[in-house]
Length: 112
Image (cartoon, rainbow, N blue to C red; front, side, top):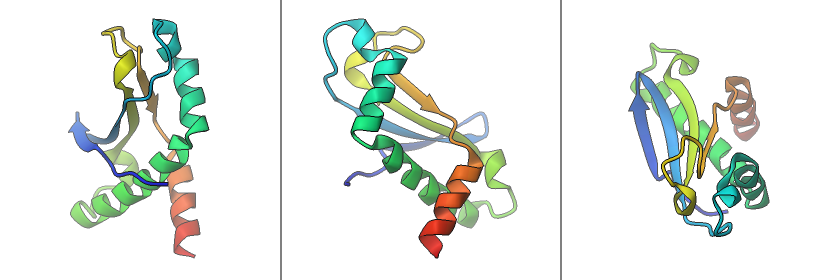
């Protein structure tokens, strides 16, 4: 697995991992609907990739804002499939709020 976080941004006080994808999933708008994006994310194991990114963000925020609980700072992950972004609310956009418990469990496993 290779990759890096394309963008970490803060919106309304919460941090979001943003990753841009140029995958060609097809020519029709439906090829970039939620179900197709989820299938592509699972096929390419982007979900594992972004979980690792979430652990990294948790560690960064613990250093930079140790007084604020991670669950108050983290908003989730957004994968932007650029070829499918047509301006519709969900076209080409995959959002996962990622449960904090899952991030913490992965972090604990990596630390053991």
